[in-house]
Length: 332
Image (tube, rainbow, N blue to C red; front, top):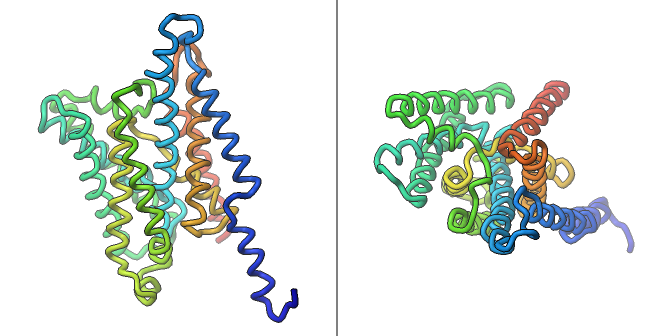
């Protein structure tokens, strides 16, 4: 092909870079499938040697693996959308206080209803997540910060204040056990009848795919997005609603899963750039793989006992978070 300008040289390279079904992506899917099979057959209960082994397999093992995949993809996507809206690579629901607001919503529901159903708990967590996230975004718009490193620190400080208030309320009304159960993110209680609401996350994922281009434009800033014909405020509210839906459902069903939304989007954008539509499949697959790997480690490291998967995720995520902060400081 005749080359007449620089654009013709770079265009095939960009197409090749943004192509989805590449060998690395297929390899990533194969790895996730292998991890899923390992997850299905990892556990103390002998499903092969017991008469009700197959029943337990479909009651506990299959729901747990499906819940891992849905949750891993969902929390990774929520982190990606949060980073786009805030234009900051160091934020996600656990560094903006969103997850702590979801916990406060759960406390409010327990106070209002003596024995709340899972739907009520999810509703309270979603509403409070939305309120808390909007408060955080409004604060960022009102206050001009000199460094992007301050943004997650403010978010974690806000989350700490909300968490302290939740603990205070829990102590007064003797609800500390509910708080501790929520704080310890674990997939051990997942079984048939306790995870099905996680399928609503698929709706949130579809919405993100539909509005991917507009969310990407919103990530360029309010002035640029407005000049390109995008209603910036509506897109921010939509993105906040999707984040709140995901975080609220995960908080009510599973609990707190720290740093997953921080690790995955940064790894993907490091190699593929900031194209939301092109990165979503990668974010979903990588999120599934990381959380399943952490869950397998949590189930086998002190077998026959089990560690909360949030402990493994928190340890891994905090290390990566510190490394990212140090890299940004060196770059500046």
